[in-house]
Length: 583
Image 1 (cartoon, helix red, strand yellow):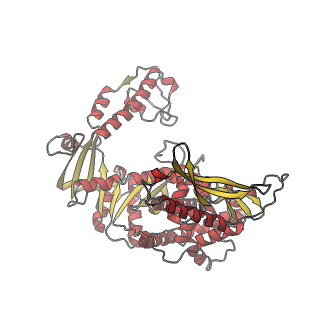
Image 2 (cartoon, rainbow, N blue to C red):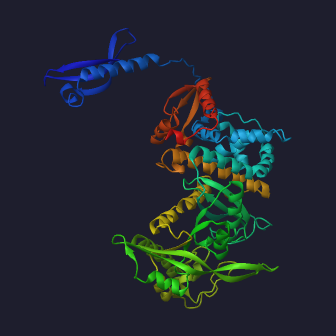
Image 3 (cartoon, rainbow, N blue to C red):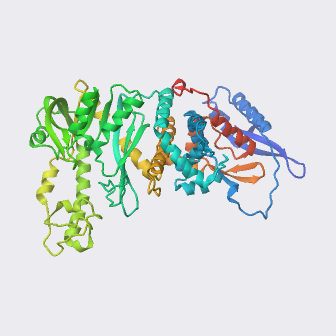
């Protein structure tokens, strides 16, 4: 490579370009323009000495060219396609996080004290990689094992045997991961987010674990409940499964007990939605010396609370479309359980606690609430017009805006299709007055209103985590039958979510887990010779990964040995790696 300066005879200006000299097949010298630079007088506006600058650039390019290795390959034009000729390379990122968290060391240490012969660490690694890149059944994961450069030498039945082992160590592995996140990312557990979701099973009969309950996806299948606790970095802390008929509010206390005991957490402030806002949870937090921040339904509150929220007095207006107010209530009444009979009926009593109430109004939220309701009302009007065509299970919520309607609870069918059905205008008007109003109750009396609201707004990330688990990681439908296997399945999903969140965090949350997954799926290579692999994909995410993880995405060709060296490096992570030290 060299710098060429040509005089343009028409304009009298000098044009610069970097060129490469070579000889053609007849041995005649030729020149190829590698990079056109522009006119010298224009380049002088940006460089003190354009000639010197680009001469150095050309020399550097020539040095890189000389240091570039060349290889000779032989192609068999009659060779047939083989699935083994195509492998994923993008999971090198997940491999690095997996080994930074020392999951391999944990599993291998546990394995030393067990009598089974299968490689539990290798099985876990495969199940996590496939969950992050090609989610499916355990059998599908096994069939996809040749998609990776890692050698997975085990049988399908070994995977199912390993699930029982993973269930046994699930709690200890969560504790191990917590320690690594605390060490590497400075996790704190003084503020946690908590929420509950459920997962359905396409089975006809329920059992002691998979039971019928309130399905968040409005299905009639048996479900299991899962409570998930998350830190302020959106990293999952712990999960716990409950029978499907367990009410959301009954899941928090067991989770808090485990967090305090296993993770040595001190005072915890739990942020949760209104489904967890009950007297028992508030009293439990107070007994432990912990705090809480819960949302509170305005529409479902008593008359005095509604009146306080809607009253304009004491609101502070922050701009034209947002207002906020609060008050400390020294004697707020809550209902707590004092006993429970054999049939499960609870006896409650009222006690008084001191808490802070916060109400705020957002015009943006008001518009959104109105739009959502109008969509449901439109469905209700269609049901009124042609009730025989609709079922409540199809248009969930629309029937709530219809007067006189009767629904078969088992089938969801409208029973009185011959009767006159009317839109409930009174209910619509009642709901409209609360559009845009939100309320929070908290134990943090001295904290500012704005900070409490900001804390609460972080709750959307745990809701998004459930969406990621169900869609991106395809955690359901679940085909496993045994409870220990089901728990192991969710352990794998939990670890996969954690690894995905870490990659997202390391990229400054510029890209979603799903976008990162799509890129790493495409970052693959094909074997074009015995030891030579051709790469065919790169994008802005691989560029970002290169700068953060020091990978080499973007190379067109690598030898098998180079690839093996890169994966070996991703697994050779120094113990006690401190991510925070790099910041």
